[in-house]
Image (tube, rainbow, N blue to C red; front, side, top):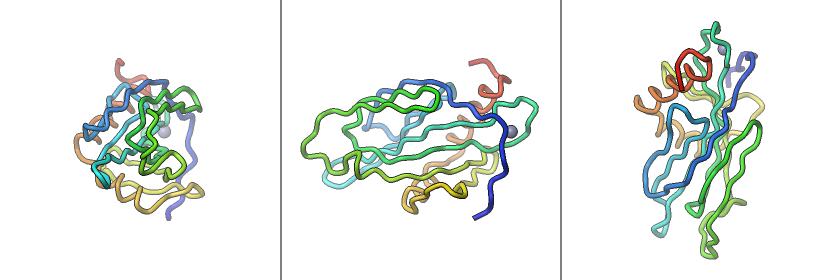
Length: 158
Ligand SMILES: [Zn+2]
């Protein structure tokens, strides 16, 4: 895969999100975390968590948003993201189909103009997760990511 360029300072803003597995996507332009949900086996929902960061240099014209992605079960209750740390809480569920231990990961960069998603060299990329990411990147998601990047660069109000 192509080697990602060395970047300047990246930023992850703090955010709290209450999981809502019955919706399809949870993301906002003021947020560094996003959740996507789809139907799983036996009436479950499968979740995919994105922790977003990007270059914070307002003079830099880079267009890539970085996403650390992991799958989450529908027993997820909430996520709190602070600089360099993700805290998750779960609803107890003895019948859970895919617990945190079964979580799969991918680290990708998403071009917010073209929608091209690619893995980051040296970082784990689960193929199925990568396909799922590509599935959910649509014009609406890209619009939100572009807005989020402007906020990160200090070029738009929160
Ligand atoms: Zn940049």
